Length: 291
Image (tube, rainbow, N blue to C red):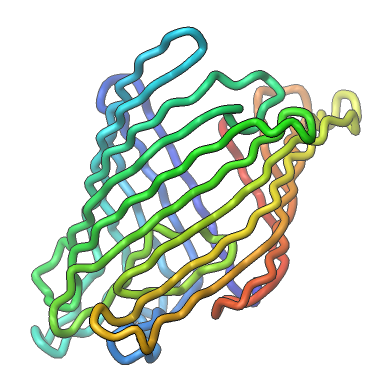
């Protein structure tokens, strides 16, 4: 999409508690925006951006009559090769962070044809701390509330809503180089001192038989219509620089199994119409849920 390429890979091992998950994110983005002066900051590295995330979490579950309730505390480390020259310390600093989170959720069990749980709700709270003494980077708090229910317009459809907010605890000069709140559907590259995010999704499967025996088995077309709105507050004192961004779009992907092996993937596209800096566009979506 507009010359931006990204690759995300994740490996999770659940042989014991806590469960460990390692995720690698690669992209060729070469700049970030500073909220202090609203200009562009270039990374002091010619290499593409490479970020690693090490996550440890304990899913405490309680099941009763097709309902699953979870309490999930987690600790996540963000380590990357993005480095920035600091005029205060006269040296290069890396934007590494540690994120504490607590998730509370309840959901009804999914049927085989469901994409999402037909009835679910949850809440996530978190605090992120920079792993550096540099004053450019400051902690932030995160909060999200979400839920969804079966509507009945189409078979196995789910209408879901998400509200999320994040806030930085600022020093006099601040750069904010991490943004775990936003989705990648229409609001990439937005950094603000305070943000509120709303998203409404309508997800439904289109079951069809387009399989070619012994070559590829297509289970269904997974479709999501979405609408998002983001309010970005650049100053905690004045609202002169407040901005509101909106995005609507469609994401559709085939859920298929190649050959006759236990290997599934989703491949499709995402079309987004947005007034955010990333703009509108059509992207290819490729996801390998599991091996």
